[in-house]
Image 1 (cartoon, rainbow, N blue to C red):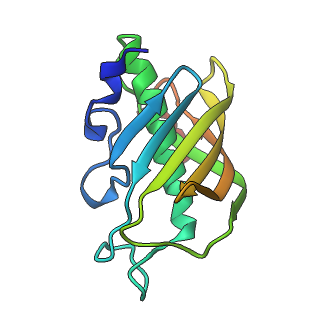
Image 2 (cartoon, rainbow, N blue to C red; image 1 turned 90 degrees about the vertical axis):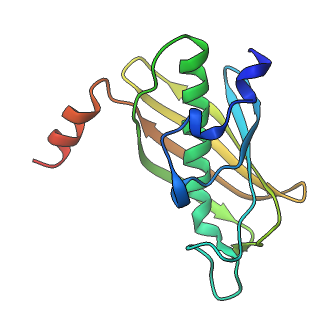
Length: 155
């Protein structure tokens, strides 16, 4: 893959904005996986009483890393980005209750399944200080027509 693609701001790759953007940078990328970094902030809206990020936010960190992977693949292929949805997760496991503020996290996702219908599954992990602290399998869907998908989901 083109090395310059990784240097793009995350905001150019995924649709999340403002305080809902939970990735700082893309650090690795190829056809099958992506790795991003994020440093939780003690004064952020999600901070617990200790100023840390509850570990269950790991699901969103993983989902945004998947969005970055899909967005980079689209960009590399010269295709426009499309909206997608997180369908669910299986076996989210965390060895810690919170991600410590001001400590960088590395979030990686790797394709397990990707089909022509837009359905995908990714094995994901989060590392802190080089140690794996959370894992999950996330299922995602990228409908051909996102607006029609939303309308069909919420009649």
